[in-house]
Image (tube, rainbow, N blue to C red; front, top):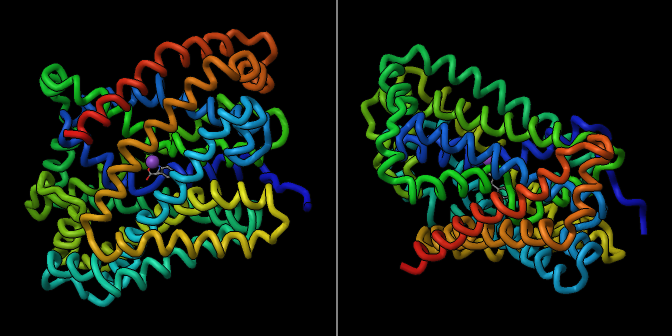
Length: 435
Ligand code: PHE
Ligand code: NA
């Protein structure tokens, strides 16, 4: 079997991880959730959740990956035996499941990139969303998005994922900064910033039972935690870099893109007096398309916006596929391109029902975001806290110094604070899901 691949540089790893993290979660979910949950007050709770829960949890995935240098199933098996390997199997399943519908959205976004240039959605944005989101055309563009994802992953860790994210992630940042600057010049910009950033701590005080788990859930989803993407990416590391430093870079960049998205989305909606609360699965598409249709040069701006969304979706999709592909590449003597294509085609087929019916799509998303990912994080945290334990501390200390006191503090923090927060989030998600 051929030599296992590694990243060519530390920056390569960081950009790939940021590419996984930055996705639809940042550009729509994050601004929308903060607006609904008390504006800047939610931002504060979210930032605390990222620092106290997201960062320690991403480090837990990093140490598992870097120590074992294995795919998610074999990583858990190596450290904890056959029962622990089941956490990895859950990760494989989640990757397979999530990519099936994530790719369907990717296909919608391609149609909006094209529609911005042709003007197809200008006359009736609501009707356009209906056409784009269900039917044979939806399947076709889902297939195109999957084909691009397969192409990048088939090219390998270095030549595909690393090269691809080195182009994609800086493009996302530059285009978003450009759009935020443009949005600043809009008439409604002030009202948009107010809506996004006015801290209403009263909302938090009244609804903390739902806002805290929302913020924790958003932090975990946004950092791609709970299905092994970060374990898999860290498994391609070699050397003893400081994982804490990498984790901080990744969480800061991910948050930065989310905040920038808020600085684009809200001025845009307020400039056209569109109510940001008019939600639903397609809200981002319908209400933003409406704003682009009405603004001068809106087609060009819309093109750039949806292009950024497409790149962000693609750089997350490749991490979902890589989790699954990595397992098969490590265990079967079949070439990566063949394995990637075979797995990708199966994921495409699983996505067809979501491309035909938006309720199926929503169900797939709810199961993944509310159950599979929080469950994966909870099991990972229990595993690292109580089974891997001292080994995890030793691995973390390789980049921090072997007596660094951060190691044991981190472990106890995982055992108590992170565990309680993720378990609470999971319990609430399950209760909401059942009701
Ligand atoms: N982090 C991605 C986002 O914010 C979603 C994602 C979750 C991607 C899990 C990969 C794995 O959109
Ligand atoms: Na994200």
